[in-house]
Image 1 (cartoon, rainbow, N blue to C red):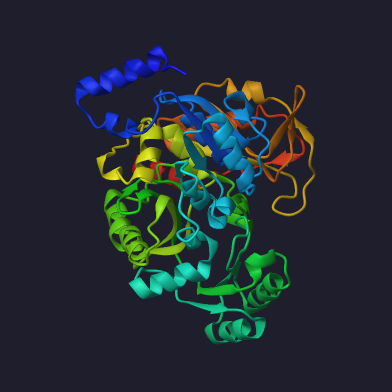
Image 2 (cartoon, one colour):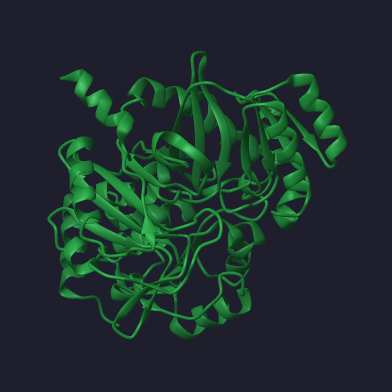
Length: 458
């Protein structure tokens, strides 16, 4: 397929400017076929941003969702069916694969694509152990003096309970493996801690609960920190904070995230530099020294304590719902950065961010993060999306003819931009009010910390 006039215009403009843009086109078509793996709100936001790129001719998403279908061709491929994914890449001449979720990363999809000569974004299975095993990450932090909470690893309940009895409460109990963001229990007393051990070893989290990590309880404010990585270089992205607890006032069980905003004022430029110096760069060096260099996006969950930032845990992929606010604030074309992360040329990249703030509100099915009803109809999406500065990203949805149905726990991400977090918050909740979905709910206080800080600074 020949490049479009728009693609040629962008290429020509960068070439005349003498900048680094053209370096990223070496070995790539400027009419690229791109495949995004995943079906959540994160993948909708990534597809939305990738679709803007003049480098992209055709965009596919596997398996996608009801909202992604409006900007990409959704294909019925399971993220863990590597043979089918490779076959599709061959058939459609896919130039680049963006892997969204953690499961295929930990299972080795990037390794398989590399072996097949198909370029992609994401870490190898060995490097993805930073997310795949909390114990692996804690041991790495201990070996390389990366600040994190004191901990113990246990493969049986009795030893874990003995450790808890010695340490006392509050304390944090985690399933070692992947548990869709739900395998972390913050136990405020001994009974809760002991019950958490029993819950994890009971098999609720499957293989993820074969081992537990018990951690010291850290006091402070949580923040999300993202850095693009190419195995050697790490580039910090815009700052963000999310809201893990399911209910207002940060009450109730942990979830995959009920909302997020960017920028996060608590992460000052000086603190960003410190996180890079004390946490991100040492992790990059450690992984490289082990022969498992990290490529992709390193997502650090941080606790900002009185003594400085400490690592809570790593994720080996973009966060959800933080990606939704990051993508709406990113002013640059994302594709050259994704390509550079694969090719090892991030040191030649620069990303630019919009000054406006962004905030996203997660609408979830009643009962989430527990049992919830599926196939309920959602109305008002067009009205919400028509508001100025609003993007509705879909997570757990599917199209049924003209109807949009909710099929997941976290279902919609109502995302808005504004001159301040308060302005973005007001716009997001204005859009939420347009959604007609009695079977869904959301928190009403997303962004409360940032809004409070903005009021104090006036």
